[in-house]
Image (cartoon, rainbow, N blue to C red; front, side, top):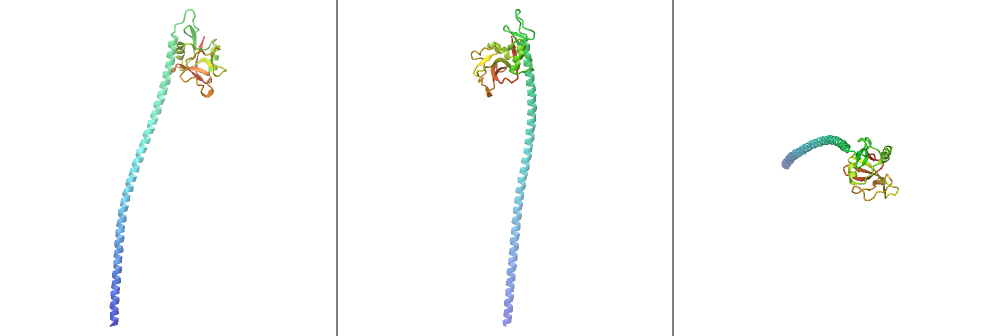
Amino acid sequence: MMATVNRSQSSVCWIGASALCLGLILLTVILVSHNTNTISHWDKKYANLIYEITKSRDELTHERDQLKMYSSNLAEEMEVLQSQYDTVAASRDKLQEELNRLNLNRTVLSPDKPCRQGWIQFNNKCYYLSAAKESKTWEESRKDCQEREADLVIITTKAELEFVKRSSSVTWIGLSRGEQQDEWKWVDGTNLEGEGFWEDGEPNNNGGIEDCVEVARFTAAWNDAPCNNTFSWVCEH
């Protein structure tokens, strides 16, 4: 009898254990299946997100490259236009200088005091204008005038200033700083009298080396400049 009971109890325990193990296995399968579905869902979600970000990045990269190309083309066009402008401006200035010379050559010579050939008369004085393409330092310009039995122009009136400034874009005149740095002297040895015809803010002796004076066409005023600069010049006789 006891053996039968023991066998029955063993059978019940075995069945219970088997049922418990089967339950655990089913629960594990359910959990794994759930986790697998969850992971698969998140994988798809992140894959879509990565795809969208990558697509946006590629579109922005393409747009950036297009803008770079457009900017490069604009820069090239600007360089071409600037080159054309410089050429036209240079041609315009040359034509203006030639026109000024032609107008100056139309000045009627005084019958009682004609100027030498190649010189121009203005207000009973004779002037020599350097060629359009010639430029010299202040000292070289003065030497050229002296070799022509003249000297750099001395400007004493506004009319004479207007006459001289028409000759070239920038022109040396016969005014320079004397040994005393606060005085200006003409080539004939006389001191500058009055305020002169200085450009606003001049003379400023920029860099401490601006000891000679030039006249610019577009300002029609005096400016101190380094004597070693090279400009056109006007001689007066």
